[in-house]
Length: 306
Length: 306
Image (tube, rainbow over all chains, first blue to last red):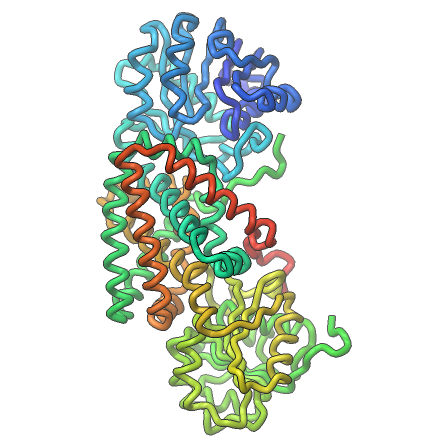
């Protein structure tokens, strides 16, 4: 439904049309929030899929063509591609255009593209905390952001009206908004997202390096915990490479704390210190309860989607 | 359905009636595989719940009372309680009774209870690779074992007819059977289950130790990967304490490999080695595909349950 007062754009340019971009495009199409969506993607298959799914009205492989005349530009590629993109489009951006993004790191994104953005556009960095292990435009669905948080990390001088418009767009997608400092965002996400992914990638990699017979059995008996790690470790490799490269400091700090804690538990097992283990495992159960209370325990699913 | 030739018991004694025990009891009741189920539990609440749910015909807190006259004895407590239990019941076991268990470690289970088991009973160690993060008799459901593996680790001298009976019981619950050496089982499970749980416990513990504001945000933004870890780390503390205490060697070996691999990735991030990361993250995606092909990617859910 397009409620009165809901946000409306004339021309939205999606630079990148993967899981996140295509899910938001679905919402904008569903709710009539935009007159025209142009999707820019290097892959011909992605452009074709976007047209076929009806989530883009036109497509191009030229970023500067995509943004010409757009009042909303959305950076939806892996964050490592942002700087090149901005260099390509900066001369074609219109005054008062809103530029936003969906990247999982914010501090480095801001510092790497800020110098190339014209003064007359409004930059509102954003991060929807939602996703699945699947990628590509066909993997998106219009309920992906429902009941999820979107963190916006605007700079102090950003026009409040622009922030409000981006917030309205995400609210229309069912999300809740949190405004946060970029440095703080990167610290929180390092522990809730980046380090867990890093560990999942590592543990699945460790299993992959086992001798062949054992490896086959690991897959066969995956249901016992390993399953969840393989799902996390199936996420988009380029996207995650870029996240670790661009949130180096916070990730290394949190990883340092984690490896210390692993050593403590390792020692517990070696010393057969059952009491200490029991205490730790009981504390962690409490955290799960808090997550359930916060309504963040149910994974998103594409059913009932556009 | 009770197909012709399906297994049948007169009196099944469940020592412990948690998630796994109560799920199997539901199957036995549903399919008429037993005349009488007696549940033994220390907790009055568990005994009451078992009666109320109709998954036990009688209850007791005396192990030796439970096993008297039973032709099937199922050890369904955390493995750390096994030895005491066997000492208590050994004088009351009947000849040709089948004793089996559902513990997640096998080598240590066998060595700790074997000396106390009379020669005239048939011991068939078992491990259903199925579970959820919930515990207690009310958390069970009769479809928990469908399409899951049950590993049996009988000793060379075990009566084949007894192994066959236990296998039939699990097949009736929808499971597939794998016969394996206990030492090998413990190695496979260390990597597919024990180490993943240990890491999940650690990472959730690390988050729990953060300063208060950050901790609140970790819970709020759990949807980004951390969520899956909190679910794993919500598993039964006593059960997991006992697993780590009883599979010390294999867990420490696999954990050693894992921490080496974490160090490699840590160095990758510090050196900004994007190429190496991308290669690793691409390899792990393949493993996920194998898990999906093996049909082990769907978590169990209690819908359509007894």
